[in-house]
Length: 427
Image 1: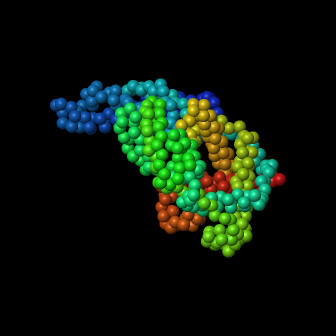
Image 2: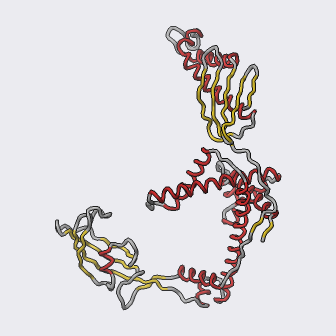
Image 3: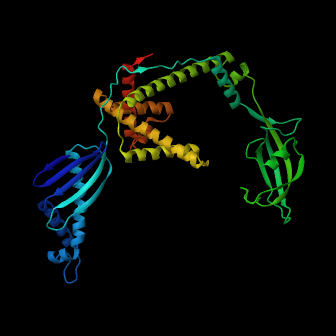
């Protein structure tokens, strides 16, 4: 507990835990009274009372009519101001919004209140030089090259008309489909749709009857649907369908040879294409190895540090991580168990994010590592060049609120990580 007393302000700060402080404050009656008089004067100047010209109402009448409102206005002005003063004078690294309670003030008396605030933790850094790290080899095998070639082959595949056979799995079929409700005898709307034969989620009846069908051939069949079927037009009905296969295409993959390499635009032979792929894979693996090494360096420090996190900040970061998960999942439904697992995963990730931020910031301070405006401008220039956008446009985009600060934090993290790796013992 830490107390401070003077004629104007009494302050008592109690440490509830490593990230919470309880602050009790009492502002003298004289100081609070001056604020009250200023607020009373303001009210008197604005008050419109019957029998008095605006601004000429007697202060005692204004006080009698608006006393509670004036007291509340004094509280609203003084409490944030006093809290800012306490936080600043005690050098408390405030997080979030203080929880204020037990506010007391009446005309002629002192103003007092209690507040609980969260602060960033003060923690001791473990030794962060001579970390033992293991480097991942950036070796590229023939199998890696072959897999990349196969991916290129698939990307350059074409759909061509099928000749001499019926529809089979992986074909794209254009069909005309019309149904008749056997109970009401009403025709359902005719549809012309593209179907990937064999795709999970196809109507089982359509899937069964399209197999083996050739272009321009027709087929009729019946199918019954449960009342809770996802297609409301079919739910609870027995339908007779007429199916016509309009056209059929299959995927044709190119041969991996010199002609294929030349088709890609910049290679004279398959050997040249393979060498380019090998070089790109080597660079990608080297980049991934550097990233893994960097993450391992920071993680090694985090694992040895004892860091308490402010609950509100942890909850906020967990929400942000969950939001990013939701963006990846999209509209896909997840079970309750899966949602709980995702929440736990998000919380663990949020803890890592926050601890990494704190460790990086503190190491940066210890080592005097700073990011200058010149560093930020150079990074923006490189981003513009890599993205092939005009530099002026890139500079303007980073003037948006928070983007330049975020870039500064990223560059500081890069400097700290580079320092850690440079000091590490790498096997």
